[in-house]
Amino acid sequence: MRPTPPPLHTYVESWTPGPVRDEDVLGVGPAAALSAVLNLPGPAPKAGEALAPMWQWLFFLSWPAGRLLGADGHPLDGHFLPPLPHRQRMWAGGRCEITQPLCLGEPVERVSSLASVTAKRGRTGEMLFVTERREFRRRADVSRGGAGHRLPVRGAADNTRPPSASSPGRTWTSRGSSPCTPTRRCSSASAR
Picture 1 (cartoon, rainbow, N blue to C red):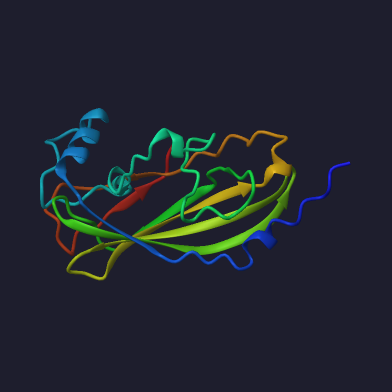
Picture 2: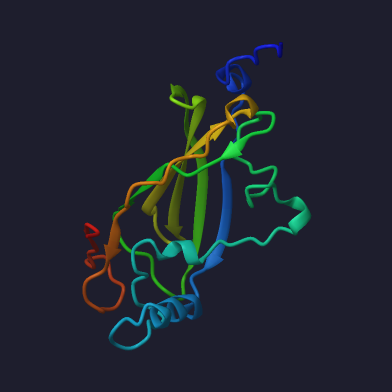
């Protein structure tokens, strides 16, 4: 008989990773490339225009060597991955709040921090839900928007069932093509 592993919350009781700061320039190239791939109408985005909501995912990229990746394709030692043995990372969702858009061609700082860690028990066993908060800031401003995502993490004892398919998310769209100004607004539309 295998010994019962300790509850997952015991692994993270004293785990408090500090914030991580990164900088990147929101170059026009990635936004123009995605615009072309999506076959969006109108001209390609230009410097000074607002970055479409959720397109911040095109920036702040890192490419670790394959030997540094786990079986799930994610880095073995991510800063906000809890210190669990044989952890299995998944995606549970996210949300985005945009107070003012980021502008193409400008340098931006991303500040990532741990928002919460919650232990829950479901049909497949115990999981930790790790919520990471990311704020994106233009150099001259205080926060212009933030995003957070929730990562369920299972321990080794809970690897008996595959995760279920996720529910449909939301599609974000930006209206207009005016230059990036503090009065520019972005809106969301539910996916159909």
